[in-house]
Each structure stands twice: as C-alpha cells, then as structure tokens.
Amino acid sequence: MAFYRITWNEKYDFATLHNWGCTFRCPFCSYKLRSGENGRPGFAEPKPERFLSVDEMKEALRSVSPGKVYFMGGEPTVAKELKEMISFAKHELGAETRLGHTNGSRLPLPGLDGANVGLKAWSEELHLEITGKPKSLIYDNFRAAFDSGMKMAANLVFIPGLVGLDEMEGVVSFLAGLDRNIPFHIDGYIPIPGLPWKRPTDEEMKAAEKLAESYLAHVKSSHLTTEEALNLAARDDRFKVKTIAG
Ligand code: SF4
Image (cartoon, rainbow, N blue to C red):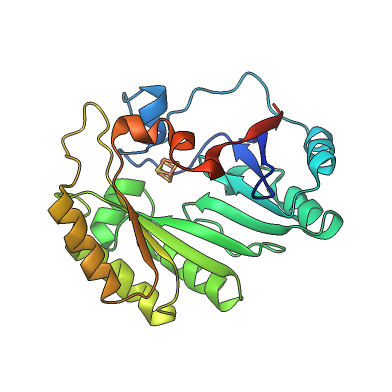
C-alpha cells in the first residue's frame, strides 16, 4: 500500500498525497460509490497501475512548495513512505502536515500537526462488527494524539438503523470530554447499492445536528445525494485540484 497520486490546490495552497488501501472493512465504505464494487466489505478502489517513488513525490512537492500537505486514503497510515514524506513536508518544505482523513488506527505520528479521524461507532460490538478492529484502538489513539498537541477533528457517518443517535451520543460525549471545541462533522449516509440502509431524512439530520450541538461547539454536516458526492468539485472549490504526480 502506497501513494499513487499527488494533487495541488493553488487557491488554498495545499497538496494531497493519495494512498491506495485500508485495513478496515467497513461495509459502507464510500469508495464503493465510485468503484461500484460491493462484493466484499471494506475499501474497494481498483488498484492503481503504478505507485510513486519517494523521489517522484518529493520532486512534485518541491515544484509547488505548498504551505500545507495532506495525506489521504483509503487509509494513509498504511503507506510505507508516510513517515519519510511527513518529515520531508514538515522539515524541508516547512509545511503544515495533516491526515486529511484517517481511520485513527495509527496515531499520533512524529511530525504530524493534525488529523481528521473518521469514527465509525461508539459501542464495542458495533465497532468490531463494522471495522473488524476493537474500539479501544481508535479512541485511545485519538486521546493520545489530542494529548500530544495535535489539532484533532472528527467525523461520523450517520446511518439511521445502524449508526444512529445512540452511537453518535457516545462519540460526541467522548469528544466533549477532551475539548468541546474539537470540530465534528456529521456525514449523512450516502446509500451504497446492495446495502439495506437508507439515506437519512432531513428531520433525522436535524435531530443528529441538535444532539451533537448539545455537546460540541463546532458541528457541521453534509447530506449529499450520490450524484453530489460523485462531483464534489461542483460544490466546493477545495476539491478543484490539479494532478502534479501520478
Ligand atoms: S476506514 Fe474508511 S477507507 Fe477504510 S474501509 Fe472504512 S470507510 Fe473505507
């Protein structure tokens, strides 16, 4: 598992390294929306034809000298070159370093300034059922990263009937116990073909927002349709990027 593409957003001055692969097996993995594959749980993006070498990545980053370098997945912490690239971004480019999206299974990391953790569930059994990993691994890591001074944020896919308000309350209560200013984003579930759960209604989303706001000061949400999710650049210019490697 390794990085296969680097993108650059000139307006917002960030570059993103994209990794292929993940160690979790979430049945509702949003990568399936694009790949259309739903024959097995977990990450299901087709394997890239080739991966980038460390030299190629450094050259591409040097060419734009970004103020921020983000690492995405799948799950970016499974990329074997991650530590070297964090160190390069931080110490040679002087950039802010952040896991733009992570499942939290490998935190904190040296040289990393922040991370946005996609939490999956609060109850022990549901966490194991969804991800294949124990809950303590993720929540202990989140706490350790927060305590280390990293800028932390979190999100949760809200799936009525699976990851509902009771699960969300456990998550936001945990976050508020660390700091009620931790940013929290509610992702309204975008239905994956072949899975039984439905997109939340507007009323269900409002109830989720109200609950989260009763614990946390900075709550945002998205309630996208499949079409909107597949064309994020049309809604948000942070997704308007140019490929600089891969
Ligand atoms: S952690 Fe994220 S990338 Fe990995 S299987 Fe779950 S939803 Fe997909």
